[in-house]
Length: 295
Image: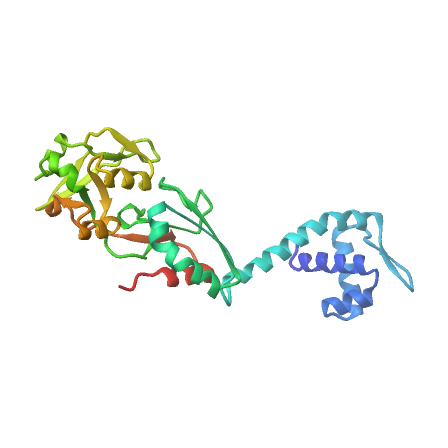
């Protein structure tokens, strides 16, 4: 296909639909003579007559009608593609798909997303809650939000929350019946509320002290895959819980829960928004700016 053929095909479609060189030329910003010359050149190149001309009218030939039917969807797709470029320039617009897990959604998105949508009326957002570590490229997502340590190295990541800490807590009533553990190894003698991950395994209880790291999978009579249920069982005294410190801070301060193994519970990188290392649309850039941690 020679250079300029696509322009000529679009011009042919305009002439065939308008049935007039004059009207089509005005639509395309050309002179009627230049448009007529271009159509003759296209017919010579393709080796077939596309337009039947008289002194008063112009109409597509049967071959031209067939070509027009095949051109219409193709030109419409090109027009949609060009319109989609609006997402890459100017004011934020278009759609975003974000995957995350429930705790991150509550902590990061719940406080900021409504304001973001009000400030950017041309942007739509779909949030998919999933405990699994989703492949955002294969899943068609623009970004994900996870703990910093879980972000893959080939992704660009932006901190959207402070460092976090997971702590071990139980009710005063629970500890009235059993001594508080002094090391992670002591958890073997306790009832612990375990969390079932989406992949099927149990969430390990991770500890560190003096450069030594431990991953413990304690026993217990209750396994759940819902944080709300785990919290309810914990506060009812069923067993020890392995919880984000921010989720139990008020209970600990009020004496409803007792925190143990504090020296073994060290901070870890908090929530990060991550996305592929590719050009970022204005919509995604605006979302990153709205969520960025500035503490």
